[in-house]
Length: 163
Image (cartoon, rainbow, N blue to C red; front, side, top):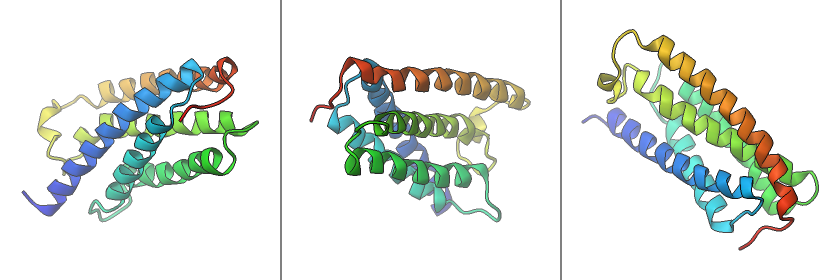
């Protein structure tokens, strides 16, 4: 196994961890309660996956690098809203929206990663399935748009987050 394949494998594993922790965080955001640990684990795993994604070798900037950079920036906004402004006022909707967008990016990478020719998971994808994957990505985007709206509205149930 080459170093590039090992990095790719670690990237996918960190991304899958981020998706799992993000699903838990999104559940708490939808219920209007934010648990401190779920946000910490989610943001740490997303940042780890994003940083590893930036180190993946490439001759040009692939979509995974672009998504990794966007995830780092949006994670910065979420951390700022959470740690600096304590989710007060408009900062809760900003936090809910940014964490939902970060989770969407992680799911998008989990869907697109097997399609890369350099990926060790490329053998799992049947040939000529790009249109199915594109349709899946549009469906996931619509789903996350609805989830983001519901997460922003979930704050009305509980005004404080628990530690």
